[in-house]
Amino acid sequence: MDARLLDILVCPLCKGPLEHDKAAQELICRADRLAFPIRDGIPIMWEQEARKLDAA
Image 1 (cartoon, rainbow, N blue to C red):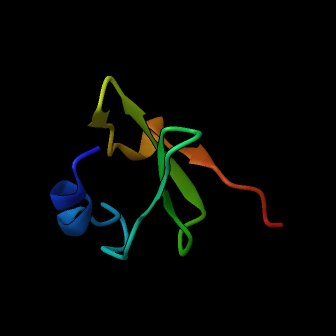
Image 2: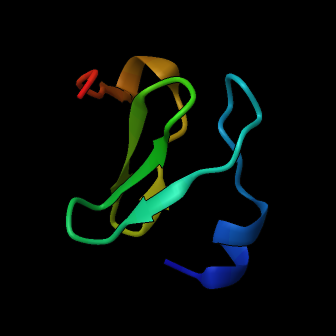
């Protein structure tokens, strides 16, 4: 994932920062507790495609 792209991407819901989880190939929004998948190097930033994170 391009570092420049990571610098400008934000959560599509809250506009907050995202964390890149390289192992899981996801962009994580801690505020909304969602993980957006990265497929073939392309972040999928649709809410319906995001995985809900556990409360823990």
